[in-house]
Image (cartoon, rainbow, N blue to C red; front, side):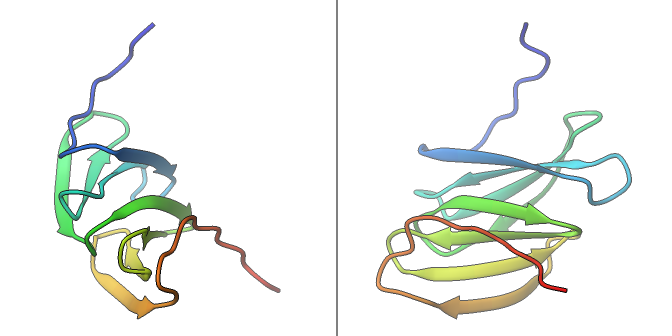
Length: 104
């Protein structure tokens, strides 16, 4: 049963869900467009479109943050729940996946 259809830019796209912002968010990347779209999980309303590094398909959420990695440029980007960029760093020639871990 389809509950909601969220539109993103050009494929490929990835999606992750996070608890940020009270009701929760759905984060959709469109790597070929270089965008991250933030939707309200509750209403499906588009809240914000953020520019990311070209090729940023993969994403992960943790707490009130979301991170993306660029397959084409090897760039790691981190954003807060409002979509403000907190970190941009080239970590490799190509970043094929993304895992977030918190340490005590």
